[in-house]
Image 1 (spheres, rainbow, N blue to C red):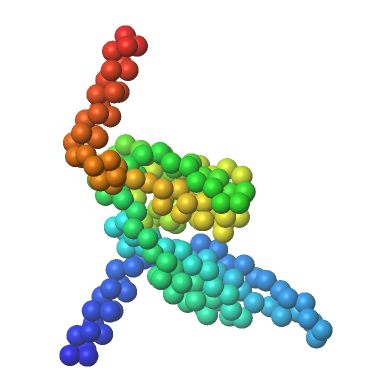
Image 2 (cartoon, rainbow, N blue to C red):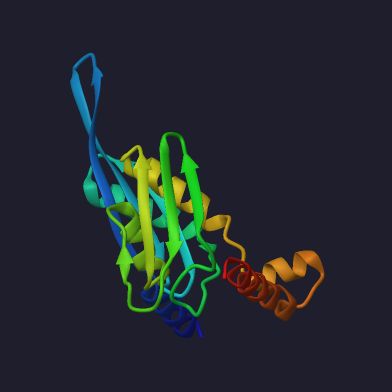
Length: 186
């Protein structure tokens, strides 16, 4: 019985994809000299819409990475994806001086993003997205700004539930309003 539980835990761990985003060597000056340690940032996801990030600090790199990975697994959030490949709508996020803009993209576009943003989208399972980072290029701020943006995404189902309507009413209204704008312009 215990072996079956251990096997299920091992399978669950195998599902998660871990990406190391950044390692920083930090030094603390003390009376006897400098104490060196390492800080790591890791993102973890299941490539099906769940993602989390974590930071860890230790005197050795592997220890810092394992601490960051454990924190990332604890802080996972579910992000709604359209067709399992892109975002539902364009969104902006910020944290401190870091600002990011995330845009939906048609099929076949790929992940057009740099640095920490690319790592987040790869572990999240997003296949088509265009992302632009403005302001700070500090990986900590960029990751937190990206999560700020991702957590503000609403799927049509969520919007319909808030308004007390059907999903078809929300989606068809959006299509009708865009068609009406095209008719007015013509």
